[in-house]
Length: 330
Ligand SMILES: [Zn+2]
Ligand SMILES: [Zn+2]
Image 1 (cartoon, rainbow, N blue to C red):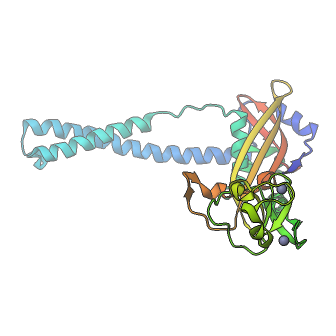
Image 2 (cartoon, rainbow, N blue to C red):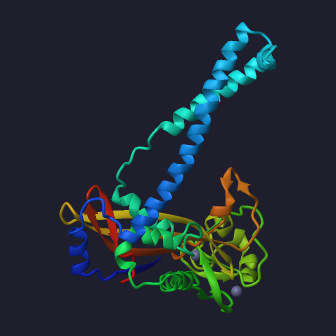
Image 3 (tube, rainbow, N blue to C red):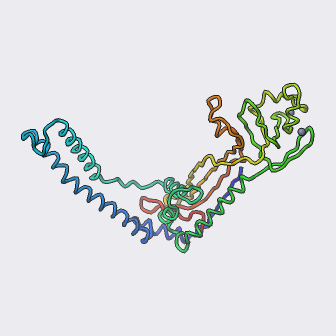
């Protein structure tokens, strides 16, 4: 398992500056103006839809009632037409009601602010507008920092992760002493049937940890009995550890954990832990084997397939909201 820790320096000045900020000014003016601009635009669009519907809904309702007294009004003769108009009326009422509802502004808990931020970072999480989230959630360190610098930083983290999972082993056969390097030690293989016919494939005895090359393994008598400890390796196919050449490594998950150690009511030490897990696929397994999803379980890199990136930040509470100070760069 590889752990990367990032401790950004956050100056006392930045903290004091944030603490001195009044409620409602969690974001710098330029960011706030953009936020207000976006909100005004949405409000305008909603207002227009509201006006149009406010005209249509009463008209539809009135026409419907009137057509019962004056059959033929607006060509509403049969039940089908009335059902259609009635449905439109009802849908209109529902939309009107929804448009009129004011969204409740709930202050975001710090965990959510931090998670939103890291989920929106570039490359590590290839969706969302990273810079936008940086502007809004960590405005304090935004000054004097370009998007390029910001992206460079995370590219470096990515390279660290890439190098961390490129770990490869060297091993030798305990029987014929043939050795090979550039192999991956995988802890688990699920293929119960045929053992994949791979060159440079080595098996590790789960009991005594001695390693055998595929040729020697196949030649072991008595259900592939380990000459060192006597374990019958044939029975252990499911639990055998392998050394395989160049598997394809695939990111299989990201787990994001936020931990807050509150120093006092308004300053929090924020620790964000991102765990990346990887699986490698060398063979093409069936989708499921005995009801177990093979894609994830087929080859497991165990602890080697995990990279943890920890970033420590500070957060300051302004009014009811939190401002995240720095995001690994200062
Ligand atoms: Zn051998
Ligand atoms: Zn053994």
